[in-house]
Image (cartoon, rainbow, N blue to C red; front, side, top):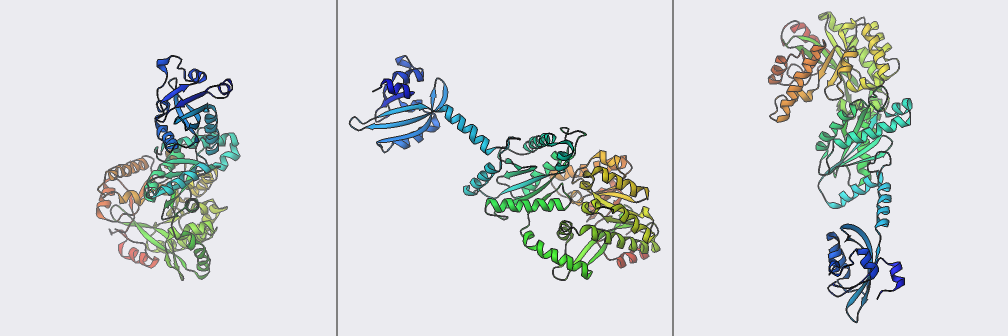
Length: 542
């Protein structure tokens, strides 16, 4: 059967019978197989095949076609290699001639090219094309709900602009390593490009995905020693869930992107889950906000704050909106839209001036009464913010030591030099600062000790867990105690918000918390209601 020409072209020529028992092997085939001795020669062609390719080969030849071709793996010299088998049927004797070419090198090169086409060159992660293919395979599989999370680094452009692209690349590589460590083997992490990463979380709904990606906030918050001066970054994350937030890849990714931008607009370094009504409502809300400003629909309410002896000592000013078109709209809905529309500096300035005027009236009933005012990251970063604060206090004549500006941890992370300068200038005037939602973002002892902060405010999520009968609540209680002890060790006061029952109050009191705020002692109320409280309860327990 063999010929000099075939031996030069083919790696092996075999003849097999109907049961694939080998009847003949060419001399080149014996050399290729490394089976010179008769007792070493394989008896059946199937014995040569990789176990995962046996079914493939038998399926191809089961109907006895006149000829066929397929690529399979064979075990040769205790090693695995790829071959192309082209078979021709000898009908007269019911046998096949198998012409074999070793294509291992071609397969290897193909795998290399395929890997390059599907993976990011810089980080080695999957790229956009591979991620899309994987998500679409997940959609076809009929598996239950899954989520995708889009992650975008906060402050990366500054690293690139300040230290150069080589340092930026080092940060991206380190970011990929940190994100890889927080996911499981079933999850898929990809880099879409630039400083955008995306996660596929199979079998996890949005709430479960939220718990996973919150770890990314802490992972990214650690200083990047790949850049000079240990650069600090944050990450804004958006989550979309199948099928609730989209039934195809493009919709899911678009909605995760929308949620991510909500995180950006809400102050960065946080996680947002896509809300189905966000896209349709945002545009109409923007128009209503502009109308609401003109019509005077925005106003302030005040939530009382007490010490642990239940004595009223101050309030937090809270912005409210009663829209003619939408009714009462919660701050979590309208504030991100105002920030995106560039209206927050304007409304924030109004709220601060209005709160200071009201504080002046409260002081007529109780000198030393304290007013806390929230300041959004967008408002704080606006040019001339420190001048606005000084002007409001000068205009109203209130004691600046009774004004506390509440800022978030994410505000402290960005534009550090500008932030420190503004804080120092205002602190010299006697104005105090409190870190709002402490424990939910980037909590750093370095920031607490370096910046002129007078208090921290424990987020209500920790307070809510005090009574819950679950293992995690024990950890939360320990965290609360640790936060209080940490704050007191560097002479900071501690405010707990969201206190709704006596059990929470008693735990916080015995843990050393200084001030209490929540529905247990008082809901947000009008300035007139606060005035009545001051008239009847000055210096007496609530």
